[in-house]
Image (tube, rainbow, N blue to C red; front, top):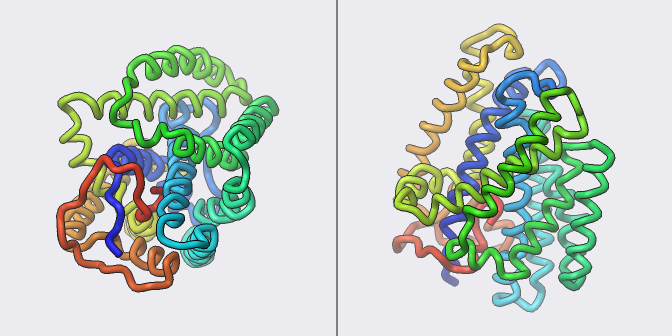
Length: 331
């Protein structure tokens, strides 16, 4: 059984989001003896450009990938939801291991639980009902001024809808500059409100800025910059699960070498740590994918999903621009 080709733009978006998430997570991962850290609202540049800006992208892509996976499973088995159930349970096991062994700020456990409680049941609902539910699960938390993981269910469903309505399949053919401009215009006043310590604006500004990032990257993907974006981010995105987990190990090792309190590290130090890890991961991911179809953790996840040993060797160059792919962290 040969794997479905991948959608290049999703790999690029996933790799881009992985970079931002690591920048945000360096201090919390290293600060193993304290609660998960977060920047004060509007305290410094991460509060405007990174905090709450990249996890929405990952959450959206998880929903996109879930519906793509459902289509793939439906073409291969009479019980596609059972395949998705195994996939989510396997992710839950990986997340719990990551949380209890390495870092209690793990997001995989939350993704798996929300997937089991929200995404999987939503596959029995018509698209319009999922759209209504997604709107409620996004608008209500924003109206209440909450942010963070509370938004994950709505973002999951929104991503799922993008696939169910065929938007995912047209990502690389659509014009994204107008949407980028709209999100940017709306994000400016939201960021201003955040700078004035309006806490309820934090989540809104985060979602709008995430919209700028997603639409902007997709717009750039239709320019001559496409080869560069693909070369930089796609390998990271194709091995997102492996890279997410290995980043925790690398941050902990670097923290042990540097010593001191992570919350006293300068922004420059955080950026250097993140950049060094990402550069190493990009090189290693590229080398690995020259010989294998999947990252090591992705291979295990796929094994648990299909209950059969995947072919690990790469027999041919990956094809792109296909509407579905069963592999990857969120695709």
